[in-house]
Image 1 (cartoon, rainbow, N blue to C red):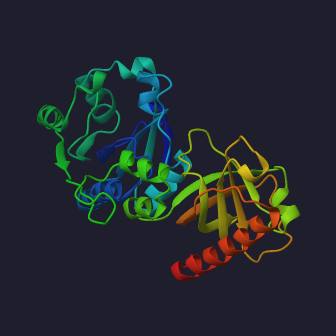
Image 2 (image 1 turned 60 degrees about the horizontal axis):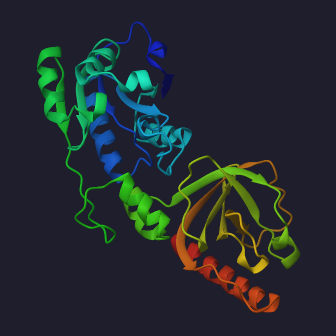
Length: 316
């Protein structure tokens, strides 16, 4: 998959293409339907499928300080899009100047002059241009002028979490924030993932016999509610069953929220400095402070057993 950052990276001889535009944070099942449709139309027409997205998130430019928690960093989104068959990913730097483009100017500058769109595939709530003034009706109207077709895909959740609501990153973020990682996975189509570099912490887990990878998460990451979770720790291509702790470590009067993953039954791992990923499969229990270290150790042992069983039942 080709990756471009900015309009100037698009090859000068780029021909017609099928395009879809959006933040696509999380590349959830709704996004997968839209992108999948774009790829399908591209294959039918014998042209490339292009995804256009933005960095930073538009809300951070329009309303500084309002950057939403992110479900997936750009490199992860690119991986997921490549798996769906996307041929090229265009990341547009979203600046104050760019945000002032009218809907018509956006269409001409991006879709017509650079990507030579043949078809544009979007969800029904797609908005574009200055103050999000453009919608799919305007996009289609402009398409009649500039020779592209608009394909609109309706998207609705069918699982237990949020059934009947449209698929959305906003709903997914809420479920993650509430600790409902199972519900979030229904929308994402896979477990919610948190990434970062393993850094040295207080090393209390090691002292207690349960050494953990303390993950320094990427900026704006959507982190689940405080508690213990079952999941996987991904290290250099290997998925290891894990018991995951999120929170401030109240047993030792901590104040900083951390994400720590204990790789179940693994001994002697040296992960410091490595970029790892943590997948959240299921909520085990809430964060708690125990009466003694002995009681804490009993709880941790139970957390590990429950996590082992949950992961074993799910498969990596």
